[in-house]
Length: 190
Image (cartoon, rainbow, N blue to C red; front, top):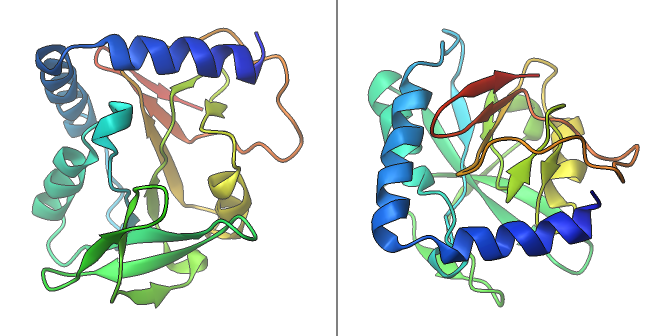
């Protein structure tokens, strides 16, 4: 199936979930994530602010867990440039102010830039991923442009409420597969 067809299906499937179903699925995703072996050398995590209006995964649960598990973990959030479809990672702390961009995505206003090569783990937003680890995002390509500039050992993790789909038929040379895909019932390594 193509990206555009899958995008429509999984946007609808995700927004059809009730709040109660999403809370339960988020808890199950956290339990799955807690079973993942985290390398000792993860120092910088790039997370993202979930959009409630898109029924996105509550990544705050996984980010908080990782901060508890790795004392001193530095957390960054993306700042996007829709003019040139680029992205910058900004380190945040308890004093960081977030403000919505013109698309309603909360981004750090006063974070400290971090180079992609210094990022050890990335939570990558998606609608669903396929059995080869290719993700279906929102179609702008921010992460597919950003991921190749990260260190070679960077772990990219995608969380999905749904099990992987068969291989996406229109993957391009610019699409970057995940390292791990996590669903409420399984963890997949690619």
